[in-house]
Length: 318
Image (tube, rainbow, N blue to C red; front, top):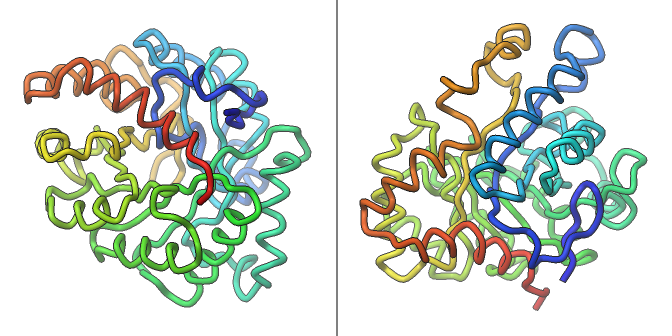
């Protein structure tokens, strides 16, 4: 089947090895419009292309960009980077968990229709169509506002059949409730990746999601300040041993630039990729060898990076 990338549909068999939750650019649009030096378009593209070419040299062909509009999704940059790096980039539609003024109390159908147009017609006036639906619950849990955003997600799924990728917070352990609510809204469990479950080594907690049929996002390798890699590796190895290999997706949640923290583009732009630890190559270069030491096989690695993403995109609505 065909999967929407920013440069057009690609046959799912051609996705190759895939990183399932990354970002190219998370730069707030209000900040960018208000302060011209917030980022530099050409410099962002140049660094993004270098970073993607590095992971392409490790055998990867596709990046799923999980940046919704509220996090600063820029389809023009995604298109330019994809073309220059010769990498597939799958873009997201959907809304994040922030209580944005422009989303509060908005009619659910009206806002869902905007997302449906991004999947059926194109994003930001282009013919680049969304390939996944991103949704999120974080520190507010299943607040009334977040429920409305999840209801919008369900309407988009019903209209388009696009798979869903969620953001969750391990601090409030909201993942099972999020999964259950989305299922109540009509999204089959097997059409969802429940994200950021790798931020814990509570195997029973992760299994509570897997047993219902969803994929688990072990998607923050390299973010040691959230949860250390050695524990992430042990968790992944144990879940594979327990028979969940075909429901696990791997990634970093890495960005070329993200303005969510106290950093500036002027500081980021001069980064040396030869010494940078947290980048798209962290999994293939540093984590995969440790996974093999932990007992995974080369076949396991290929399934996790190639087969599982393909299966996720190929599943049809129930």
